[in-house]
Amino acid sequence: MCGIAGAMTFKNSCFKITEPYINRMRDTMVHRGPDGAGTWVAEDGRVGLGHRRLAIIDLSSAAAQPMCNEDATLWVTFNGEIYNHAEIRAELEQTGGHLWKTDHSDTEVILHAFEQWGINCLEKFRGMFAIALWDAREREMWLIRDRIGIKPLYYSIHHGRITFASEIKALLEDPEQKRAVNEEALYHYLSFLTAPAPHTLFEGIHKLPGGTWLQVSEDGRIRKHRYWDVLDHTTPLAGVSEEEIAGRILAELRTAVKLRKVSDVPVGVFLSGGIDSSTNAALFSEGEGGPIKTFSIGYQGAYRSYQNELHYARKMAKEVRAEYYERLLSIDDLIDFLPQMVYLQDEPIADPVCVPVYYVSKLARNNGVIVCQVGEGADELFWGYPGWQTALRLQRYDDLPVPRVFKHLGLLALEVLGKKQSTYYEWLRRAAKGQPIFWGGAEAFTESQKQLLLSPRLRKRFNRLTSWEALQPIRRRFTEKAREKSHLNWMTYLDLNLRLPELLLMRVDKMSMGVSLEGRVPFLDHKLVELAMSIPERVKTKNNTLKYILKQAVRGLIPDELIDRRKQGFGVPIYEWFLDRLGDKTRQELNDFCNQTDYLDRAGVERLMDQGRGPQAWYLLNFALWWKEYMA
Image (cartoon, rainbow, N blue to C red; front, side, top):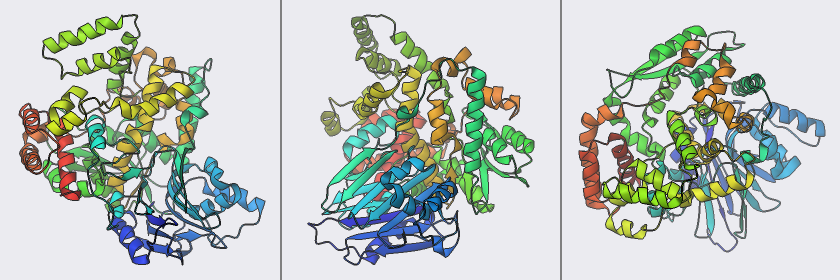
């Protein structure tokens, strides 16, 4: 796990890349790689690569990056892990013709795999990765993001060059990089708590979508290609028994966890006491000679909106005889962390869970662990959210043969009743437009609510825009490719392409790497994702039980008490904290922001604050603090 950076100038540019230029980009990310740093710049000044190293696999200096092949015709800087690198190396050694400089570096496997199979080598990789690879023979750069989008990769094209990095702040080191708010991305951020790829909140700076590569030629031609889509790799399991499906899930999970134990440094597990993290802990402990280390977060005091789950985490830790570590957070921890949180995020990631993720990562790092397994992905793959039950039920109601005119009449009735800002109005509006009701597992503001929050200028600019436009490319792929076009498959596919890579996985990446800790995600192993997307909806939703088939798969592996308890989720007592000092701080920050900018409507913001809508105020606070950090 590392931080990568680099640049390439095009033929028509007189700009020369230098080591100091690359080093400035690279060293904004010391937290991503405190164990070493490297830079390579081509003699002609046309290409440069930088790397900050967090040593995980092959700790020797021979495995340092940027790394080249034996004749220096290929150079790579790489962030992530190729978990099956030993298997691929063995295959390459059998073919012959490759000279190796390291004992077991997965980075070197990337170079020789590209030599052997070209860009099709990606089909063999099982892991998470952001890769920049320079092919000196073809004079072209390859930028690659892993299938799911676990690792980030940003780029910008300006002034006759392309720059790229693991974090946006590295790109901002280029003195000619424009700093401006991407207002269309802001509009979508107010819906999804994040900017959908390829947007970022920075105008002119893009993020590479998951499962995509960018081929950049020295004449400036750019080719973008989605090399993996889960819908190309599904085989509906119609007629397969529940028992067999459950067995396959457990087998794939066991493999995924085993692969993610590969490391030359200590590895642990984040443990909440829910099904996902408990399954990780149980599978991780299999075959271990000594106790594993688990890490848990709770909160000081008692809250109505959030109940600590630490007693469940302790129970599971005892079950697997783990070394158990926990920390209780307070509102002081949140307020103290806000400036650093905004800096680490690069662009707003408006999920308050960033706070506990940072502190549990710090807890692990302070106790000698450098890699941790996390549970993201299980809820999306196996129907784990209560809100998804509601969305699926509404979508099925919408399938009933009700003339669209009655839906429009319902909208008019809600407007007359003053309910235009309600979620019910938004759901009915989508149904009347023939759109899916489900727009993602995390929605911040409805289209009508956004119109009240935006400044008059932006309200006028986006008068005809809705965030459905950001979802249409995903919907088109789903319609064209899905073998089972069920509502649940749409929900999972959408979150696999938006909420997971750009919100949930980014909060893990940015917060864990903020303390130089690597997060690994067994539930998002692409083979497990492909299997999960092949399971029929009727199996996943049997008896209207959340995570029905996953519970069947892990029953007997973890205690029934953990399987059958009511789901809570990894949360934050945000309501109570807003009633405390966080509310006053938010009001002041948003007041200052409205005084200095023309993005939000002051009256709309004050109304929201007066109504005590803490979570929604948090989303605006994130944007205001980001603007102050990077734009003011």
